[in-house]
Each structure stands twice: as structure tokens, then as C-alpha cells.
Image (cartoon, rainbow, N blue to C red; front, side):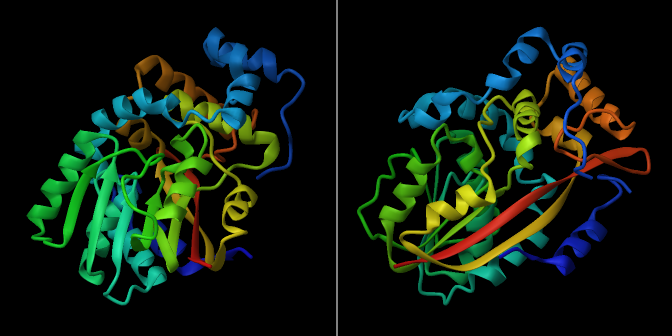
Length: 315
């Protein structure tokens, strides 16, 4: 089921400029709770095991995280499109996998600065970008105008209540969004609703760490970005597709991430930054695992995000 795109991964590793600089055996030891108190703030350590409580699983209020999302991405807007996760290697790969025929009415949901929409624009009839954060859409619109893209439109809106009729689009895509939702099934069902029968739904998101490290991985992600909720597992993402879609593609790509650049993007406060760096350094020295599996490139610390791409055709 997993088809690792080795050539892409290797090319991506080689393509990083000097600006970004140039295993899972042990579970947490019994003294982890003591160590975590030294590394994390007391509030965080007390909430570690409960950080993704039943409210996540049971809540039907997809708006719970609106304020955090808008706050976080309003701040990121000016830097997001230039961040290395927006590099053309990723969008070129996505375009190849989608294989649009040029006649699609397309939609990017939780589009941010419309990275996917701007890349896909020359290959579809038209595409709309929908996002909650005005600043992100404004940056996306500016970049689209700069590239003279004329078949792209922009709408401020809620992914949990898409302002479109049923069966409106031939192609719907969302990238790195579902881990920001309290209940990701709500936007997923909305994307399914507005997609035509025979249309393609494209979900490209991070894939959860192994079970024993999942909570601490998510907790560190949320320390860095309070709008983060929970990374879904491969099985959870597959389950969303299983009843109404035929999966046409399912691939995992390892995406190298420079720790300092990752923290810079969200403007992580210095005290929290120190805590996260301390945790990464401890793992590098043989201490407790974080789920990130950090490694060194020269003097810089890196880790790999696992991006899972799923493309399904609506039955």
C-alpha cells in the first residue's frame, strides 16, 4: 500500500540550498515523566497525556480552533510561500500525480497562500482558493497576479461549511490542513459533498508518528504552533476514503525540515524554542524519543516529516 517515492525523496534532499543547510526501538523510559518536567513547562507536562483529549474525538464544533488558526497563519502569511515546503519539487510532483486534463473546475480548500492552486492553474480550466485567513489569501492573490494567472479566484470561507452547491467541482485538493481541525471528518465530508461523481479528491498531509510516540510528537507540534491539533495516521486517512472513493494513489514522501527554519516560520517564542531544541538535542544524545527522529547536517538539526498523498475518485 505504501509506495515510497525514493527518487523524489533523494532529489528533495539534494535540492536544499545552504540556507537550509548543508530509529523506533525504545518506548519512553519509566522516568520520562520526571525528565519531561525538566524540559517542558509545568502546564505542558501536566497536560501531556491529555493534550488531545476526548474533546478532539467527540467534538462536532469544527470552529473550536478558528482563533488559533487565524492568529497563527496571519503571522505566517508573509513567510509561508517562501518556506521550503513550498518548493517547486513538491508542486511538480503533485501535478504529475493529479494528471489533470485541463477541463477541471477545481477547488483548493484551506488553501493558505494557494500554493497548490497557483501550481495547478495552468493545467485546469479554473480553480478557486478558499481559506479562513484573509492575510494568507491576500498573499496568494498577490503572487497569482505577479505570475499573471487569470483563471484563479479567491474566497474567504470555512472548510467546515463550504459555500458551494453539491457536486460543483471536478477536482478538490487540500494540503497540510487536516491536522489543524478539531474534527477533520467535517471538512473531509464537505469536500466530498462539493465534488462531482467521478471527480478527484486530493489530500496531502503529514502522517502520524508510531503509536507510542504519537502524543509527544503532537504535543511538540502544538508547542511550536498552537493551531496544531492532531496528525492523522495512515489508517485514519484511508478510512475517510474507504466508503465513497476508489483510491488511485497512495504515496509517502519524506520531507527534510530544518529545525531552526521550522521554528522561525511560526515565530516560536524563545522560551518554547529552547524547550523544543532541548528535547531534540536530548534525543540526538540517546535520550527519550520525540517521534521526530532528529539528525544533523553539518551544524544544523533536521528531521523528516512524512507526507502522505491520497488521491481518490468519487464513486
